[in-house]
Image (cartoon, rainbow, N blue to C red; front, side, top):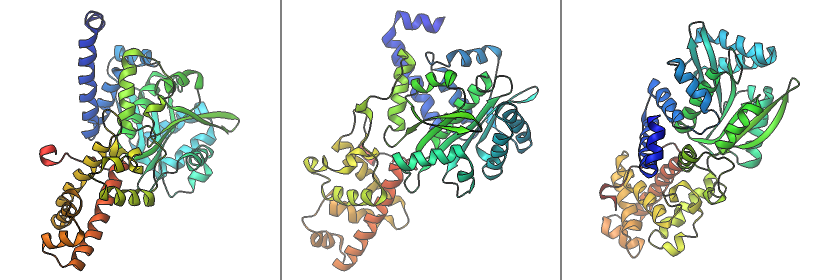
Length: 392
């Protein structure tokens, strides 16, 4: 009641405070480890008062505490029993095989009777023959291959199984387990795609519409249809998605993301490396940098959309970070003298650095290689760049 009255009396102040809380929870979720991640993910879900699943979240809250936690090995049998009861023995056998190979991505909610609900994610690449035996993951990876293959270092997250003991995928504990475990996977891993596989589309379809996840494919499993929703995070990145979710927390709504928020298809590793080399030469030429393929990458993304200023800043931030690597001071100095505070020629840069030209060229090649590796890690979400000292 107090929350609703605050929103009614002072909507702008309410939105401002809500954004502060939203950003605080997201920052905490990204930085947290262990069970703190589950708690913060639940906090973020409770901000979504206009989600189609709001009723389930608040019904759970009214009942008392419920926590999503990593499963223990001795709980696998209960998880498999619940799945078998709703989806049959074949699904339970597949889940058992996946759990034997990737046991660490199973989350559960417990009550006095044991496991009340569970959610399980398969992370690809797995190197496992199971990806071909399982018709759902086979279909998921085929879709990814057609519409946006994962690049080196990126993963594909398939939320493959989730169910509650009482009401299968409509069970309030299953809703909590699926939503919390998914948020944690999405925020904490270098994902190319997130794909969620459901049985009950009538119940879950509106929720994925709210999340701006696209309906990707259907696949028949033992005479029953499985439906997959998902997102290519390279096209619709996490920070942009979180901003859209913050707006929908207030206004509700649904549908696909606005076209203006989508990035171009992602660069592969070789094209990315070539674009970095070209961008270094154009670092202080915004007119030429604007044509860089990197303008569609995460390196150029800023609060107001992609910009040449943000792209240049990201590259310079990465150059500064090279100094933190073993023997990185010289590589950083070579890049700074060649590109950041560019000398008229490479010969002049070598002279300023006091290096023979052949030695300088060798160090320059190594510096560009290490810089490209770092920028690639940023692009696929493995690392986040700290700001440069002084911020210039």
